[in-house]
Image (cartoon, rainbow, N blue to C red):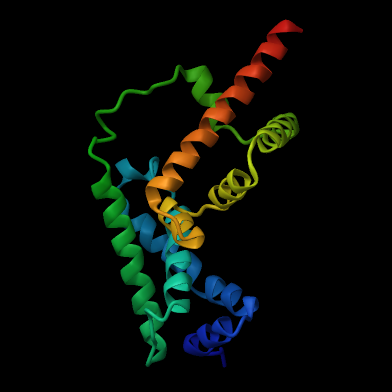
Length: 194
């Protein structure tokens, strides 16, 4: 018989990362399917159901650890996950003011094909080199913020983890973006010169 979800949550609270993996294995795909159903076809290209579900698990784990969620019955966990998923989908769709059917493609077909394709070995090497150069130009705190952002944390989550205001996080991330743009421009100039 499978272990109860409430028991897995308790094991996770005690530091057992395997319990978190088991919860994700048990519920992740079902939640992805739910998010996919709730996202109308016109929103599917803008929101990835897997990203929504990752955010759901981050929220659940963070708020459970802080004591916001307690589970009396085993199905309470599933009900909570469904509720968080539906709220996140609803909030994402509400947050978009423009109808994707009316949006014009910002890229020509060739550039869109390059951006949307799977990265190859050369792409990964170039990305890794650029990332190393960006990190070299960042302060330790900026490196930490970039790592958290690349791990998928929201600005609110980063602010909470670092006990700073969200505006501070936004301002620092903007500086990081500027440095990324500088590194990309420098790399492009070097490429053009060769």
